[in-house]
Length: 350
Image (cartoon, rainbow, N blue to C red; front, side, top):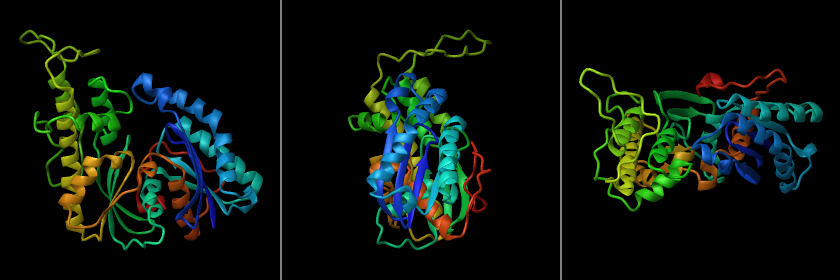
């Protein structure tokens, strides 16, 4: 069964054809990293325009590379949300047009569910035994999900403010590192001492929620020149904080990364034990972080799986894979389907 996946939730325009939810036969991604780099983050209006310019060619190339015609497709899966509304609309409207003209079924996919199903693309011949625990860590999401079967999700916890990827980007900006922050902080941290600074860990309580805004603020106060505040007066807002000359960017990056990874690993391992899962799955852009991978494997007594690097970031193969399982469950969407900028991953999403 051939499923065409279309992904445009943020700053990648992507299309892919996947067979039976496991075998990738084409996977095209048009990245916008260079476009947004000078802003230190994604500029939503520019992202939407770039999607409009790229999507037709990207989808056509995905189908051509798969060696099939549009008639051979069984269904069209497209990211419905969560994400940037303008970006989502480009992909959704293009998918609707294809569904209308071809008569193929339309499937609206939760972007987070797509990240989950990136794990089904890593070892096509290996069956995953439920229940499993999924840690989704990306630029906009940090979620701990108990998955008890296809379409059966229980959200155990998630970020209350900045997601892990956002924290990487913001701290990277503070340190003067290029966008995106995650891979650049990781590279810088390799030359630093993770014990040089003792930054706070995220919500070391019994919940499975995360909070990284305090960690980000602690780094900012440590590395930037703080204004002198007269007694009895409030601290003025910092518009363009200057980096202190006596700090080691390498050490700060290593210490920050250690604090963030510790929070992710501690709660994930504890949840895995509490809920008796068979293995831990990690997905999303931050799951590419080698320190996170190594620490999770070292501290868990369960198997730990994660996608290859090219499937960690946003892609359409994961959307097609998720679409296959929705299609097999007999689910179909109408052309009245609308995008959702926020959309929690729960069983109701299936």
